[in-house]
Amino acid sequence: MKISEIYTPWKIGSGEIKGYKKFRIPIYQRLYEWEDEQLLGLLEDMKVYFKDAEGEDPYYLGMMTVSPSKDEVADLVDGQQRFTTMMLLGIAMRNECNEWNNFTTIDRLSFTARDADQTYLEWIIRYNNSNKTTPKNTPVPNLKMQHALKVIADFLNNLGENKKTYCYNVYKRLTFFVAELPVGYKKSPKKLNKYFETMNSAGRSLEQHEKIKVELLKNCPDGYDKSYFNNIWNEVERMDKRILCVEENEGTAYQIDAEIEKVCQTDIITDYAVERQEYQDYGMKIEDILPSEEEPKEQRARKDISSVIDFQELLILALNFTLNQESPLDKHKLEDVFKNLLANFSKIPLFYRNLYLIRLLLDRYVIRVEKEDGKNTYRLLTDEETITEDERRLIQYQSMLYVSTPAHKWLTPYLIWLKNLEANVRKSLTASTLLDKLKEIDNYQIHKEKDLKSVDGMTYDKGVERYWFWRLDYYLWERRKEKDENGNYRFFNAKEQNIVDLYVFRANRSIEHLHPQNQVNNEKWDETDVNSFGNLAMISASFNSQQSNKSVEEKFGRIKSQLKSKELESLKMYKMYLAAGETDSGWIKEIKNAHQKEMYRILKESFSE
Image (cartoon, rainbow, N blue to C red; front, side, top):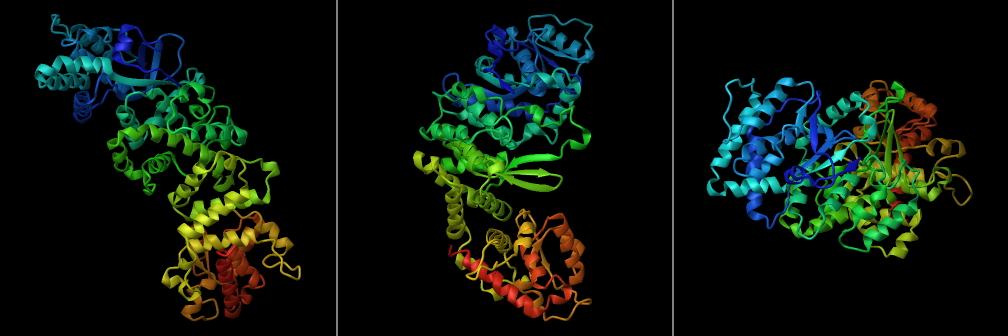
């Protein structure tokens, strides 16, 4: 997606702008519908801004999205409500500021297949003017536009002697950008309509991060070219692609490494748009949001590749870096957590630098999650054909943290460590070094050895923490090939390792009793044994709902099915199955106790590596 230069009514009206000068609203767009609250909110906000801002600082209205065109007319795919409002502002303000007449021309805004609206707009452009006589044959009004003009006029009348200055400020300083969709959209009305529906579903214009984007640009201190920062935001916003790779996993690591080193050498980015132009489109191809028309229907919308955090969480992570804080990545409170940065606006340029740097570090050193047909695959920026065991361990440990631990708890210290490394150290990092650092963060900052309760305290009725099941599964996987002093495998024989080797971490949340709580179909156990750590495993909610209070035999039947498809849900549960001799009659209290002792020992040993 191409991002324009800065637009203002003055630039458009004077002909200074090199981009589009005329705009058209397609038939699939909804009618004009701004209410008093939105209109007055904009008018009041501009009033406060023009009073407090120095010089001619722009007031940012946001981003307009258009479909490509070879002439000067562009279809407004997103932003028609704001552009129509801008036209109405000009019509209402031109009596106080004659320059507005250069913007509010008959051909500035048109409507496709909406003749009544077109006629009314042309009529108010011609005659909503104190210097002209209104003819008797008035067209049928667009009531929303008519009411909006009255709201604007009433607001201006209450400004008193400041009215002329205000109208001139809006003309000169009301600012927006234009983003152009890829060429393929012009030839496909179906794509344009689908894009419009996608971008406007769930009230897109009201999303918190969009408001923050505008506020940050508005409050950015003087001396910085805000188009640089706007380009950074637009590139990092798409979390389903690495920003320096044309195709997922096809970009080379040195490309990102070089960019990281460049950013780390400065506190503020001031040349982003110039030096990064060659990569600008890689992370902003809107056609990747939607299924291609050439794709077979059965292949559409099946694959989703994403970061371990979403864009709103990335914003908070960058904010934490900038203000040296550790706020939880709660995207529902985005506006609240950004108040501190807006109050300390001198750090806004540093925020953009951190936003870009963190995104680079995420792409280079943190797994991405590929979801297809309900299955997860975790990938690092590595060659899949030559991946090493250390790289596999790093992927597995990160995926364990991804499903078990709030992202800010492990990502924040991990990324800060990466950021602060000397350039030569960062260039020589190995998967083993990265894994050691993550284990150190996990063991000394997040889940400390003292947090591991005694085995008697890790029971179902006492609320055993789910993290320990995920951690145990990781170390069972990591130690799957380990042998004792006699050369015998400790945990899994060679055949079993083929199954364990394919284990993938999932966000399972249900704690399952192998020996069921309802013991009608099994030998009677004491409640203490039923709820003990040795009898528990963590599985998916669907498995749990199907197997809850089923007999051990039926639960083992489900495990056999998982083995056949090589999709185990729990390595601990698999160990329980193996410990019982793969038969339901083999799961007795003595075997459970031995299994419990072994699993607890593995957890204890995991802290002494």
